[in-house]
Length: 222
Image (tube, rainbow, N blue to C red; front, side, top):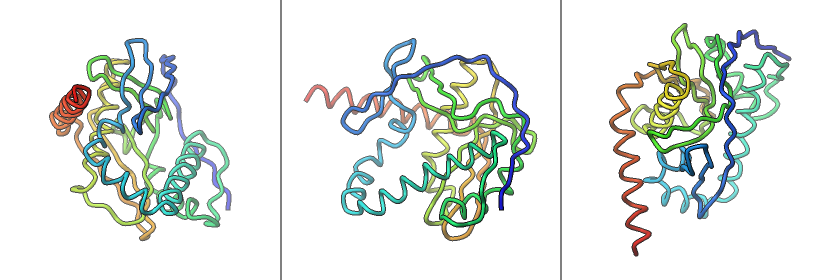
C-alpha cells in the first residue's frame, strides 16, 4: 500500500547552516555565535558511559537500532513532506511507521522539518525533527523507534531534547512552543504519545547543561 501525506506547511524565514564536528564521541556544531555541543550530546551525557558500554557489548543490535532509527525518520519526513510512502509492512521501519501513522496524522501547519537550530543563551545546537501543531497546539515533535514500550520516567532525556529545541525556536523566531510531543513506535506493537508542558522541563534542562559544562571543565584540568 502507498500512502501520501496531506499536510499544510507554513514556511519559516530561518536560513541556518551548521557544520558538524565529532570529537571523542561528542558532537559539536559551528554556529554564527561559536562552537556549541549538540542537544543530544548534552542531554544524554550522563548516560553516555552506559550506552558506550552497551554498544561495545552488543555491536549488531546497536547497528540495527541505528539503521532502524534513520530509516524510520526518513519515512516520516517523506510522509510529512506529502511524498509517497510505502507502508506495506515489508520492513521493521514500515511496521513502526504504520503503527505511528494515526498519531502522525494529528500533525498539521508544519513550521519546520529536520531544521538546524542553535541557541546562544543555552549554548546548544542541533536539528529538530519537527515543529508543528499537534491536535492544533504548537509543539516541538520528536519521533522515536523503540524495541520496548516506554514509560514517562525513563525518557526524561527525550523531554529535555524537545525542551531545548522549543527554547531555540523561540530564540530564533519569537514563536513560543508551549508543548513538547514525543511519538514513539515500539516493536512491542504500540504507538505511544507523550505530550508535556515545555515549562516543566526548563529547570532540569538548565541543570543538565550546567553539570555537563562543569564535568568537562574539570576533565580538561586533569
